[in-house]
Amino acid sequence: MASPDSHLSLWETAKSELRNTFSRADFDTWISTLQPLEIAEGNVLVLEAPSVLTEAWVNSNYSEVLRRQLTLVAGRNMDYRLTASVDASRDLPQVVASVSRASRQTSVSPPPAIKANNTFENF
Image 1 (spheres, one colour):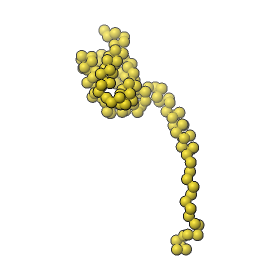
Image 2 (cartoon, one colour):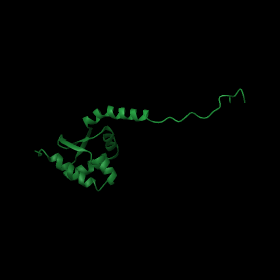
Image 3 (cartoon, rainbow, N blue to C red):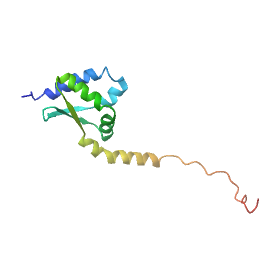
């Protein structure tokens, strides 16, 4: 039987190896933000992403690298499942509201200096 914290040690070991695979910016942005939750079905590391964007990006761009590294560290075939944090979906309306406020604060350019009597009829 796996120890209760085996998912933590598996992820920490894999993460330290992944640090050498990615650029520092990519690692800090996409990989270091993932949190291990559990090992499900004996060979699936369940990871939590801080946002839906992170979940989608990691699944689209780094899935093979993650599977390969988890398999190397565990010494057996491993997979992962990524879920977005529940808190990430609650924060979404606040983000939209702050963007809406920011867009209302933008300045408007003055109208172009066009003379009203310059029309096609007067040309």
